[in-house]
Length: 377
View (tube, rainbow, N blue to C red):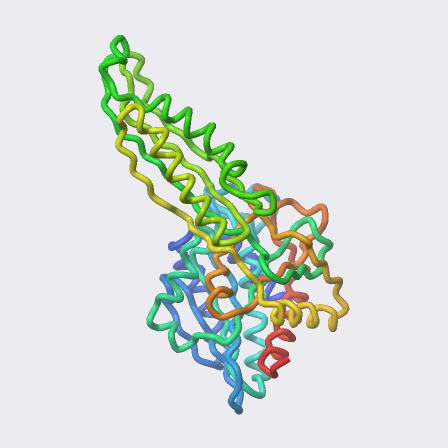
């Protein structure tokens, strides 16, 4: 696996943000072309790639996805392959996910499946919640629509090499809400002549914090987190007339999310009404809940147990979000975790680095899972 480790290190040293994964895609294309096997398509959803490897007999089409993009987080690891780009790093392990899927491609190229078709998808722009939807909307991807879809994600906090499996909701739905408040400015000595948003901002911040208490029932987990607020500028002679408040909404189900969104929109308008403010609402980084099919989740657990790996089964969904929910919601399948170590640096930390020891485990696990699924197991 030394060559896959080297590949991972090259990808780590040249991280690229969402929608800018050009050199990452070129590195992957070079590797996949060298296998001289299967059908390779590039430019999916922007910078995505897919390699399809078919068996001699008809059967299901099974997709496995790896994410490609890095984060706007500095890389502070002490390694000769540390990020060469200021303020950008592979702080979620997507470099390791790509290396694993390249290893799976190698194995399937050397020993193609007997039946069906394996589709290995390298997906861009996962971190912004846009990549999966863009790939699915790409006409070139229609040829690869699967019967089942899988993805793994490394998870610090679990024993290294353990597999984390859960039926139903695995990762939460989330939406970024942007509330713009537009009024009229005036002199700071005459605030009564302005239509200022200061009180509306205060109402919005306190109202968002209490929204889960009033919008959802006790058995319907939800969270509303104010992540940014801006009111006017550093002009002590001016009563500001513009403001913006941003919040992230999270739930475990789409139905609860829809209700939380309705209440958040209602809150924004009610906070703005006393001052006669214009309200503009937009949404960013929308992630559906990733809901695992029971059969697909059990197939992943069976593959792990066959390898002698420990299987953890969390009783609750994870609070973070993943755009792989676009795949599980449409085709069925499962997202599952691969433990990165109980004391490993957390995801999105500047000190995080994907453990190279997970590469051979991930390759064998995904290959076994693919062959089981293609055989109808």
